[in-house]
Image 1: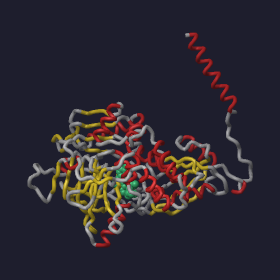
Image 2: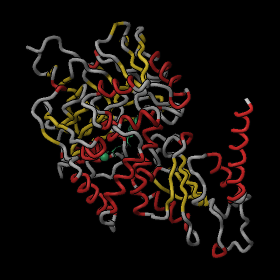
Image 3: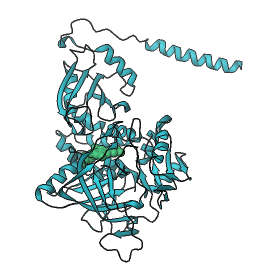
Image 4: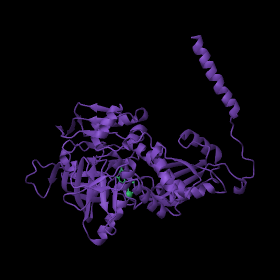
Length: 500
Ligand SMILES: Cc1cc2nc3c(=O)[nH]c(=O)nc-3n(C[C@H](O)[C@H](O)[C@H](O)COP(=O)(O)O)c2cc1C
Ligand SMILES: [Mn+2]
């Protein structure tokens, strides 16, 4: 099921008992964060929160704020219009199975074709709700009161943050050479009423686009969509291969074409059912200090130079709702987005590495710091092949610690993985340290983005790996006795009930 609007999604959440309304005024300066953080830390991610009366500098905002709308397994599945994320993974698997691709490049092509067949291709429309109210900054006449970023309930998230940050922006850019679209989620620090930062990190696709505009000496058109169908927001965060269109992917996810509309002041298309659209441009070479920002690492990211976004227009729905999230010490809302990405893309990992059983990114590792992977081990040093494979795949390149376990270990059970890690490894023999690009947010490397990564082979060792002692079996009860105990206990239970 696809949502026509962000508010339709919120209604669905409310009907499912997944949304709490807060009707008392709450300040966008730190107060919303504190309430949202407590909610995100409560069992199973708590509920989504709708702040009906957010305050901006003590004044009531015209727009409500919704937060934590994807912050549980259930809400994340609902945001994709599904009852479970596995449903999507299975559909991707089906597309890939129709014709096994030999190379990743072929896989990207096949995926695009497969998604096309499912009628996911975007559709161009000429009018849409995101244009209900139009504020062009070059044309102040005739549009009533002109709004600016000062009128949006943008959060100051944490005490040491450098200002207010837009935390769920879907940033639309184009490759100036091929015309290919990209949508990424890159936070935006508000500098003034019509200027923000653009925190696209060096390894991300929009940064690559920006570099090409810079080399060509051309202004870079950029548009930012907020709200709309949450499947779009998820697509902006998903680590899709460069060249796979996020809008096609979102169409596949929601099972319906995304309706796209031209911007007013820049040559970019955005989803017509967005809540807000910020239009503008980035000047080649213009940089400005961005940060600090309380980041998803659980630490403040220090000030660093990033591109600057100049707004030329804001358009919005009459009844627009401002979407937000906060990041910080895990677990937070983004953990569920990351988990869903891993589940959905497992078939793609498996296509390259059929021996992979399962992958998990535990919350403590904040996406890239810790990866658990289980494999069906067949030959000596098989675990190292998998580590190097993952370190070579897209954003998995950032994985700081990879722990490889045997297929019978549940990677979603951190305690079980740690048990295998401690029991099955000899530290010198079973680890490998390599050089690879590090996440720009990782504060541990001495020089930003230049880090080392470590792999742990926690699989059982083979004679061909030089382990000549017999590898012991794990202590487990026989299946027959387990079955007997199940029967025995359920019999005892019904006996107890009869006696009552
Ligand atoms: C809530 C949230 C905030 C994010 N903020 C940023 C950010 O500020 N900068 C960045 O480069 N990536 C950020 N990311 C990660 C990117 O959105 C993610 O890597 C995405 O796949 C990038 O898309 P791309 O491959 O098209 O560049 C954020 C992710 C989430 C879930
Ligand atoms: Mn992308």
